Image (cartoon, rainbow, N blue to C red):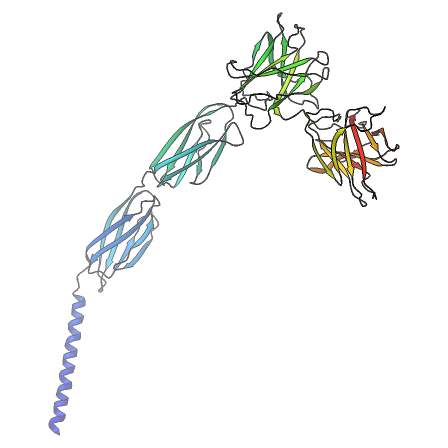
Length: 518
């Protein structure tokens, strides 16, 4: 037994001795580790001009790296072995420093310059288009690869700063006058590298319909023959023509065909209306002939003459020229206008303005329903209308054509009415009055006259106190002492027929000749 005990003690002692020896050797090995060596830095710069750099340090005998970015912030990042850091840099050179550390705490430093140079934008595509709302406007957009933003200058005002925009955005610019301008679009990289494209644009103010002669920048290039022609201030501004500028024409010499050619910027578009309207003012007798014809750019192709006749003396009016049969496939690009074609010169000065395409004559007061060419904009409520030959002509109204209003049986507050939109607003004063011819199936029919703003019936002038006195016969009603909330831009003429009372049976009512008497 003693031998056994001795053996165990000896083994324990030996084991203790072995452990003590291993511990001492490990401590000595740690102290003997060399400082980190073979340090390196790899910079991976993204190619999207964002300035994003991936920094990957490497080395031998390293447990961690501290990367100092050297971008002026004083910031750094500690990375375990095998990891990297990311940082956004502006364009420039940066001495990036890395400090490597091992298990024993020994360090080694390494510095490498990072050069950040942005790539010039590529595939720059610039689109310049005409503005949809202005003859003087353009819109600009652009696309490119490797760009961070765009700048555009429009070549009109050197002192005007460039407009910065992003891909997908649109820049709109209106020039102050006609001319030739250079639009420059620059694609930015975020640094010094740029790519620029220029485009030349011509800003024109084309002569086109409707033609009102109001432009201060446009050269209308009027061509007179056997006449004196000028664009002047409107000598008679009125509700019938409140334009600032009009054309004056007076025949000269001994010829009977004095007139003026009015060129356009291109062929007339006949895809819509094909007839013409023109405002005229003439001191010549009522019934004076006014003639328009159309020609191509050099006059080698011409339409027939289209005629209209004045109905006013020394006042503005709108004449309608019915061009039925016109060959609209021809490239007509100018008008020729004559006053009193075929008549000898009289030294009378005539004026014209506002040439436009139209389906029919303007709807103006007085409303007589006699012109078959007029195309009315008419609405109704609790009733229906039709324009028919006068079914009951008499001494009060012998007109050939009237309006018929068929009113059904209705309950109270029915507001049976007919509404007619006219082309010129009605001017009101304290003494304004109207007359209207009415044929009613009964005496005592209340008739209201209201003239309101189109689209806003709360702005109006009206009379609600006129009542018929004749059954089954024409009579002329007078409307005066108007009341309402405004007198501006009133063009919707509304006529009510007993609008508050109920009727047990349908009624047919005729109206005609709405005339503003003062």
